[in-house]
Structures are given as structure tokens and as C-alpha cells.
Image (cartoon, rainbow, N blue to C red):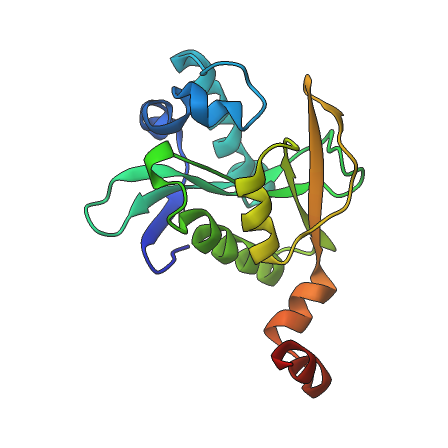
Length: 188
């Protein structure tokens, strides 16, 4: 998967140190995931290993995001399966984590848009969800750009309050193949 400014490849255990250095080792990045502190290197290796295993188990997962110019690892974007989803039966999340100095540059929107389109064109799922803490307005903005809408009230999940957003397949299909009526509504 790739976007205009980044190339993505399957996340692997080998990228655990890089992921730790650029994102999971930064307490400010993890604060927006509901954690009070950074992950240790072994915790990061476990998280990356769990994400990598989803490729084998489910045929989708997270992509390591590298800048096209220079190949620097800047984060991860992709799909996560949550067996204990706060959204009930909807368990496939579109998610992203970027290093702090890449925030606000459009990488999350660009990469998550590509992941959204990849998911709906290859997976038989009725909707995608995205989960965030209620205070994470930056993620809200990305979710809105992706076409997701807030669906759930904040609720406890993994030790902190989260809310979930979703995009139904039918709404995504209308956005990529609008009918003449949809086109008039979108342009007006």
C-alpha cells in the first residue's frame, strides 16, 4: 500500500526498535492512546509482534510507514482486529500512530484513506471503526476526513475511556461511486 508521500509495508518484529524510537517510546504520543507513559522496548516488541501476527491470522494488519523521500520510518497505519471491540460486533479498526514531528502534515489522513480503501475493496466487512480517547481532537479531524462519524458514547476499554467512530461500507461505496443524485448533493 502506498500514498502520495509515503510507502507502506507490513509491520514486522524487526521494526519494533524503530517503532519504539519514533512513537511508542514517546510519552506524548502514547498519551493520545490513553497511556500515562511510554512503552518499554519489550512492550513495544510485543505490540509490534501482535500487529504482525494479524497478517498471518487475518490477512490484514498494520503497515510500517516510511517516507518516500529518504525512507525514514515515521509510524504505522492500517487495520487492527479487536476481539473485545467497544463497538460490539464491529471489530476491524482503522488506526494510526505517527511520530510527533509528523503530526499535522496530512500523513495520517493520506495513509488511513489508502488503508480504508484497501479494506473495503478486499475485505467482506460491513463497516470500519476507529477508536480514540474523547480528548483526541486531532484524530477526530482525521476520522471526519475519512468519512467516519461518531457512533458511541465514551466507555471504559482497556483501562481508559474511549469513543468509537465508524464508516459503513454503503457510505464508502457511495463516496467512490456516486449516483447523479449524490453528485448534485456533494457539489451543492
